[in-house]
Image 1 (cartoon, rainbow, N blue to C red):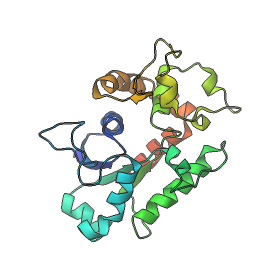
Image 2: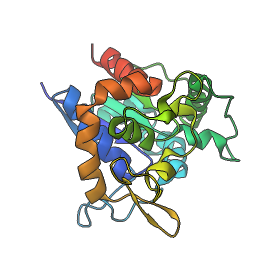
Image 3: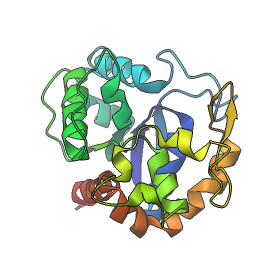
Length: 230
């Protein structure tokens, strides 16, 4: 039976990657829960009452009790089999969060951030229907790993890729040409468009085993996902 999976993500491109990965693993239907995107505007449109980014995730989690009562009621009302909450590890460095740990190991920061997300939900959550996805330093590390398997950024254990800040900036840098920079920029920041990710994501799927080898949090996400559906 096809599983129905709800996804809470920082942004639409993160959702696109997660949806593709999940469809790669499972027979499933993925629904974007947060940020809310008006169907008439399509992906990339208005991001709903809570907005996008990690602050949108925090507000959504904090309002879960008001909106649904608790996580169990949320699952029942939306009739979903699994909820995935995505948040990038770089959020741990935000002044309002401030839970980043020395890296390596990357797991210490990701575990601290996971605990913070659980506090946003307002109660201890021990539920196989909930899976956290915390790419380090952000989702674009998985894209970098997939597109550039042999690189100095993967020279474990001295400088693991997951400890390199802002891989999205690396792959959008004009000097990065392996074979070319993977994202364009706008006002000095990576411009993450639906069109670009439609081209980037298939390479991640094709090289997923290498992504898991390079990025421990990618491997953890798949392991946690498999445990949730057993």
